Length: 78
Image 1 (cartoon, rainbow, N blue to C red):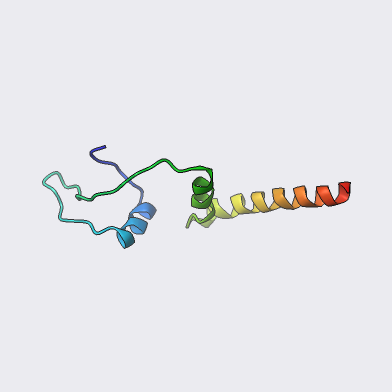
Image 2 (tube, one colour):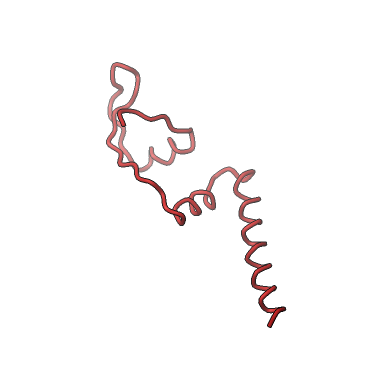
């Protein structure tokens, strides 16, 4: 992959861990990144830690509600 576009939140996250070099003549920044496919747990953590609360909180409440329903259902069944 020669270039990729990232959103603002990802840019801020990467800025803390990657040193961007000078701009190239095409206006892009040169950098060496290794991109790999995220597994299930990686995807889960990415959504769980998302900085936007409008997206993060409903997902977290849904998962916590599902787990509580599962646990209470097992307790009630026993």
